[in-house]
Image (cartoon, rainbow, N blue to C red; front, side):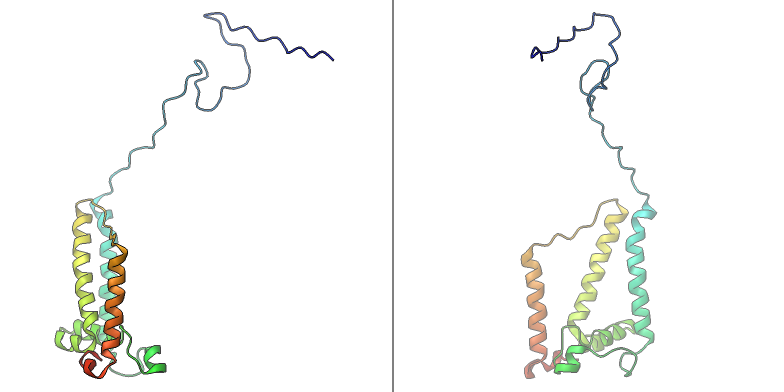
Length: 178
């Protein structure tokens, strides 16, 4: 066999049509061989105000529905809601114990009774209300809502829940017990 390389193809003459051959590589012009300009995705279409407000309004509708249900079905009457498993099996109050009674009292406008049932839940309702108002305000202006808390904040929230749970189970913290 002959070990000589095949002859190189001569470059096309100026003004002539290139001979048919393999298609150009992806991203190159078939005529000049230069790369295509980058293809950009279409610009996002701004969402309408109604669409931007739909999610926060839906979340509030669910919360109002839940408070409405708890307000109409009294958790102080046994048999309507399941018992807290931690309280049932250990006799210890978790941070959520008394939360339904607190929500029932808030739904009826009795803030003192709500604080007596679960003060931390009442604080949580207030924080939710503030965050929801900020969310609605930002959504109305077309700005995204994000809560990017540092890990120290989450550890702090966990510590507050733990301290609240421990204190409400001790004799001097019985005022926090439901």
